[in-house]
Structures are given as C-alpha cells and as structure tokens.
Length: 319
Image 1 (spheres, helix red, strand yellow):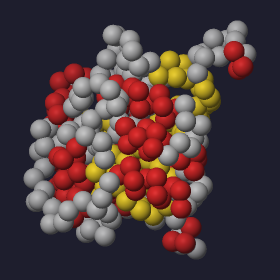
Image 2 (image 1 turned 45 degrees about the horizontal axis):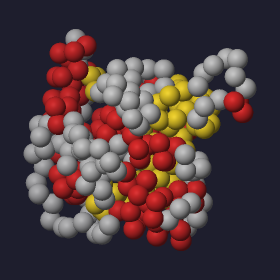
Image 3 (image 1 turned 60 degrees about the horizontal axis):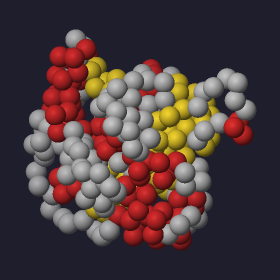
Image 4 (image 1 turned 90 degrees about the horizontal axis):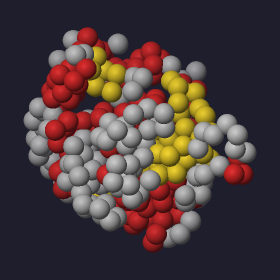
C-alpha cells in the first residue's frame, strides 16, 4: 500500500535561506509525510529580504508557488545581526543563479504562526532551521502559543560537540541566544537537532557527481559549491553537512534518530560563550537539582538511511 496523503503532518517551516535551508525546503516539499502550510523567514544566514527572496526562488524552481512565504524578524531580539555569507555566499544560495521570483510574500511570519497554532492546537509541527527570533516573538505576543504546536523541531545548538561559529556555539543559537533560551524555556515540546547529530551526515562531492542535469540538480551542485570549497580548505574534504535537512527529518521519520533527554539551557551573556547550550551532565545530580530544563535531543542518526531518504526526496532521479 502507498502512503495516504491524508496522514500528512501539517508543518510550518521557519528558515533563513541559506544553502542548507534551501535543501531543507526541497526535502520538506518532496516528502508526502509533510503538508507544508507556509514558509516563514528570519534574519540569519543572510539579511531578511535576501532570505525571503531565496525562499520564493526555491519554491518557483520546484513549481510550488502555491506555498506562501511570510517574512518575519529583521534581526535578533537584542544583539546586532550576524550573517554567514562566507559560507552561503553574498546572495545566500552559493553560486546558483535562480531567476527573481514572480510573486510577493504573503504576510507576517509571527502573525501567521500565532493564528495557525491557535486555530489548530496540537496539530501543527514547527520546524525551525534558523535563529529562533520569530518563535520567541510569537511566544511574547501570545504567551503559551508554542505549547499549542504538536512539536517544535529545531536545528540548533551543540551539546557535546564544539561550536561552528565560536568554540562552544552553533550559528543559529549564537545569532539570537535570547530567542533560543526563550524557546527552550517556553514549555513547548521541543526536539533539538544539534551539531552532535548534524555533523554525522554530509553530502559529499561524490554524491554531486551522481546528480541529474535537471534544473534542480544543477541548482544543488551550484548552491553547495562555495560551502564545500570552504570545508575542503578547512578539513581537506569536500562536503557539506546537512544541518537543516536533519531537522526536517525529525518530522518525517523520527525512527532514523537516536534520542537523549538532556537538561539544558542557553547562555546569553558570556563574552566567549553566548549561544552555548549548557548541558548539565553531572552524574551526581538528581534530575530535580539539575540546571536547565529537560530537552529531547537527537544525538545519533542512521546516516546512510537518512542520506538515502534525503536524496530520494529532493532528486528522485538521482537514486
């Protein structure tokens, strides 16, 4: 028997496109398990206007112009905006050259989140793959609204793994540590995909050689090229980690992952540690005495199984 579309999980994807955000959008829209109600954008990898345009470009590439795009926060709650254009390129999508979108955004991301979660309590999954500013603003405007999500799947943080922007912080949490802390403390059902798991799955140069010469295949090759070159210079191996697609994978098939409950909070003030996930792993502390709150963290993954799923969904003819 095939998959019944009526069983699709309704999701909102909150992103800062971004190369791996684009791959996450492709995975979400290529997966029948998910019904993407809308894509919200936030300042992060690139400024908000560029990321919003990139979301519209990717949707046009995929022939999915029916999916609305809602721009959100232009910057973090308190700190100065930071970007990752050295990884994603000044336009956010590597060396790709997608045409300008032929439509405009639909409305405001925060209002869309609040309305959707409030009218469909415990139905909709939030998948957040950028800084968590939009989610924090929604919670501030409508206290308790994040608890109305079925689940909040977040790509962010590093538990036992070193950071990728500072020695201890992952980019999304570093970009807006106050928002990350507020979301973890919101009481919502949060599942975290930290660097501990996203560094276990990579798209290699050998995979790119197998991609078809379709518009989507050409886009993927051109989009990931600068990031692969950067990692190649640092690690002497051309690859791109599938950070954001892993968070989408949490909503598609959690059986691919291994989970651990971690008592954690986010540091917001440290000169050297802002954005750090502080995990209380003290063996002599009982749960009631641990710092932070229990967070469901994906700490392991069947990398081969996820990669096969990813490639089959974004480019079916490549596998």
